Length: 81
Image (cartoon, rainbow, N blue to C red):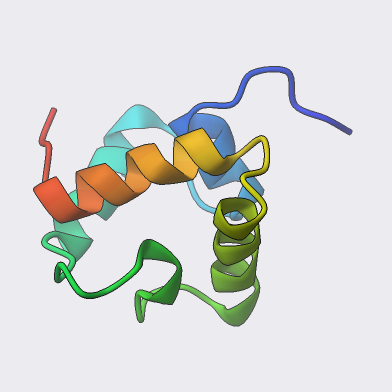
């Protein structure tokens, strides 16, 4: 089933993670800062399937790519809400 809205919450659902805003913020806080040289899809905290999904979305500039980019920015910049 295709999800209509692509945002961090639905991305986290797609990755099998808790998608509540507080849980997303906690995940980002726990894994911040991601070193500049580490691509979001190569971060050590992903499972193989999660990493493959993220990498595929970015390489193919797929529909999830903008949301993966947003997650990447938050992990590298540490935007705390």
